[in-house]
Image (cartoon, rainbow, N blue to C red):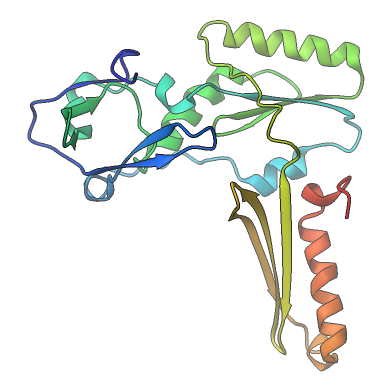
Length: 240
C-alpha cells in the first residue's frame, strides 16, 4: 500500500535500517523503521515546536465551540528532497529494500518537517491552533465557527489531508496520579490506548519551607490540588 501510494519505492542504495510490524487498533499492521542509527547522523532542526501547555493557555474560556481536524497521515504529506531519499532506506526479509519518498515517523526532524509548512499554511487564521498533525478550531458562537472552519478547510483543499473521525472508539480514557514526599510533590496525566497507559504530561515542584512541615495527609492533599491546577485543561468537564 505504501508503494502504491508512492510513499516508498524500491531501494538499491548503501543504507538499510531494520523494521518491525506493530499492530494498530483496527488490527492492521504499522511498519515501524528503527532509525536510531540514522538519527545520530541527522542534523538537528532548531525549529521551535509548539508547547502543549502554551497551546492550552491560549484557549480562551469564552470559546464554547470546538472542532478537531486530524490530518490524514500528516507526516507522509511532506516530500523528502530527492538527494536525501536514499538515506531513509530499510530492509524487509520478503520484499527487499525500500526508501521513503515522504517523511517517515521515526526521524528526529519529522515533527518540525510537518509543523513548519503547517504553520505557514494556517498563518493569519484566527481561532486556529495546532500541535503537529492535530488542528483545533474554536469560537464563541456557531456562526463565527462556520466562518473559521470554512477558511481552514479552504486552506486544506490545496491538499487532501483531512482524516475521517472514528466514532467507534468511545470516550478517551484518562488516568491521573499524584505523589508527595517531604521535599517535592508530583503529578502524572496519562491516557489508556488499547489497554496500554501512555503518559501525556508530568508536573512537579519543590515544597516551600512551610509546606515541608505538613503532615503526610496534608502533603497528599497538596499534591492533588497541584495536580488539578496543572492539568485543569484536560480535566474540566470530565466525569469523575
